[in-house]
Each structure stands twice: as structure tokens, then as C-alpha cells.
Length: 138
Image (cartoon, rainbow, N blue to C red; front, top):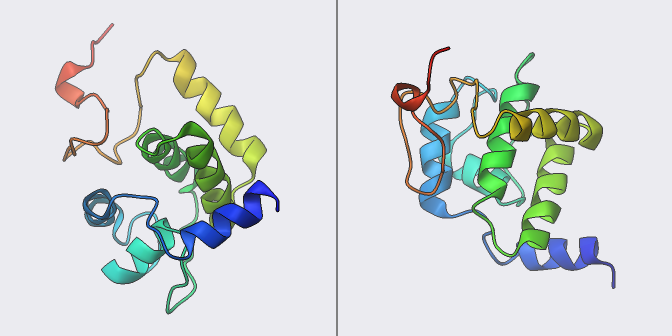
């Protein structure tokens, strides 16, 4: 049985992304990164489960979604499961792995700085993002 099939089978009955984290991200992303989506559909979508309506990414939001995927994947253990979740989630958003890898590597080279207002107004303890007040200017 391949890892991908096993991951899909496991994700059908088990949440990969913490519920509190899903709800936090939903409040931040609601009607910004995704078209109209209920909270329960968003939680299911984040956990790669069926939703009542197709989830559509808003135009020009792929980069923010890549940053979100990277941040969320850092909260998923073990690392292999996080990688598989990220690949499946990106595929469900219509974002290529090459696009994600390109921007993920840029973020890592920036030594933890995330030039993204996705999480700027609020913070969640499971996400290790620096607030705008901690960023150095220079």
C-alpha cells in the first residue's frame, strides 16, 4: 500500500490539523483567501475531508496559501505526515508543488521573516510566526 493511499485512508477518520488552529485560520482567512466557506467546511477542508461545496481559492491568493500551508505543516508531527498533508492540501487548492517549493525555500532563506499579512492582526500559540512588532526595520 502506498504512503499516499495510506495517508488518505487515515485522514478519513482522523484530524490532521488541530481544531483550534483550523478555527483560528478560518477567522483570519474567511472570505479573503477562499470564497464563501462555512466554518465546518473549512475544518473539513483543512483536514482533507469532503466538504458540502467545492472550495475555491480566490485569485492572487496562492502565495498566502503557500505560507499558510508551510506554517500549518510545521505544527503536524511526524514530519512525513506533514509533508503528505501539505502535498494533498496544495493539490486540493490547485497549487503546484513546484510553486510551493519555490516560495517555501524563499521564506526559509529569509530566516523566519514572513512578509505576509495573513496572520498579522492575530496570533495563535501553535503558529510560530513573529508579530509585526518583533520585525526589525533596516
